[in-house]
Image (tube, rainbow, N blue to C red; front, side, top):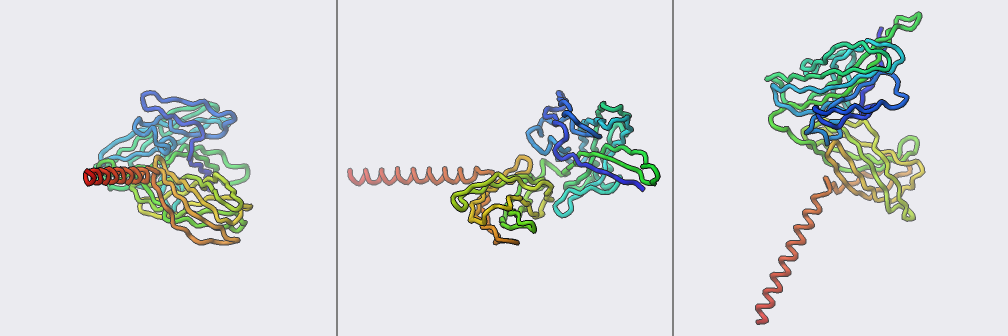
Length: 332
């Protein structure tokens, strides 16, 4: 029997390099780092401003394209280790990035190799490896998911037949399609105030992925205009909500058990990578259970309303000028 301990590196355990292939930067290890570690060691220039690309292997490619990423593996386990490196299947299930057992295979893993496949690491040392994804000419369009794993196997505890396997990994998101593919985007349909079984106030946002890429949701909410002019926050969204293209999911933000029911003005910001959406809603929390859903004024990145206001202002100025000219001619 094998007992597997898995850890996905979501926001790398160490600082992630933000420079391009030509000048990768290796950050210092944090004090007290223990166990096996893995991180991206380089980021393509065109993706250096994308927060997701700093933690995950993310790309959009045409069929027939080959991409590479360099990763770093570190051993702080307190003993020498033989580290196995490989790609394992993953998927999106119920708005969660889910990993398959063991060395499960999907199409993306069959295109992915890690060189070297094994590394002998003394304690306190590190090594680099290259992840290569060779997309075949006949690859289907769409986004696929995997994890690049670094794995060590320990001796079974005395008197047991259990083998202890520990692994850490980096998510791999690959969108296959012509051109740049559909950009990432989403909309916030409504927000619902509620209290969980422990009485903690929560704000739940219904989010629809309207783009062509999977979304890893983050964000926060600020409350203002509460009873007695109270304000509260910011409160951060619960991590772990991943939304597939075309899907809808709920993003939950825990607030406080002592929060008055309201009403409140909730200013909600949600983001995935470089895409930000802002919305405001008037909400009242119930004494218990689920409250009344409220539609939102999803303001996207925050710029469209500015443009609309500018257009209206220009139109108003033009109208006033024309009226003044017409009146001047009549007086003449």
